[in-house]
Image (cartoon, rainbow, N blue to C red):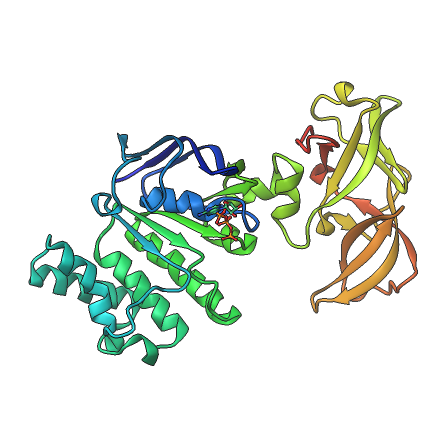
Length: 361
Ligand code: ATP
């Protein structure tokens, strides 16, 4: 039973602040994904959790006990790396048991039992005597995960473990990792830059940018209620559209008006406070509809490119000079150069502050 707390953790490398006052609580048995663009501080956070990197300020606690200054060997933690980090001259089995044997905390029988169990879970029983070069990428990664599991760690850290696998295998391994976690319920912190991977794997997802935590929430909540423009644009593919607007009173209600944009806002939230503010209207490509425009709501776009995706067609267009994307029916007759008025799902709109990016509606 292990929960992990990062209490105001900062990591500085000379003049670079890689992680800035990070506060996160990971529940016992939770699968938390850290996601963000390259250089946002994900790996540094993981390395601090592993004890491979010192903490400049703040504390890390495991089940309430400070572990900030503990050596890696004194934390019961296992880590799975992107490049597998297997010893090439050792068999898969020896790779899995090496750490346990050298730690000297287990009898030979215990080690044997644990390898048998982990190999069964990972379906690698027949590969145990092979050396890494005789294994495929996916098999190597299974051995690397097996090595982490045999130690029965209090918590498991994974740094982009699937990124060296081809797309098909990655999707398969993703599903297997989910199953594995459901079975073992080991507290897991998983780093990726891939938002789809984050959304499909995480019980909760923590989005980082520039060393700072942007939002931590369940996947659907991140998607539906992004806390700011960064999260809105990072989570979801294609990204949410953001169009410049001003909020104006219109009879009893409010409208968001901008070049090519005229959208009636549903009366929720405090719209009085936003009147005449310069904001960004956020709307996802799938929440715009080719046949949905009416007198109250229309977003006028010119089509630049049509991209057939099979089940739908993605339209790349411009709304008064701002690039925007729209998902339309695969049978849509829209062509490059067409101008079209889209309607919008009014309960799926977002408004972001133009300067800070914070969600205000
Ligand atoms: P990626 O997805 O590319 O691995 P990341 O989100 O994991 O990126 P980190 O590797 O944690 O990012 O790096 C965060 C920042 O800290 C970057 O600006 C990086 O250049 C810097 N950094 C990381 N390690 C060191 C180091 N040992 N010395 C100096 N700067 C470092």
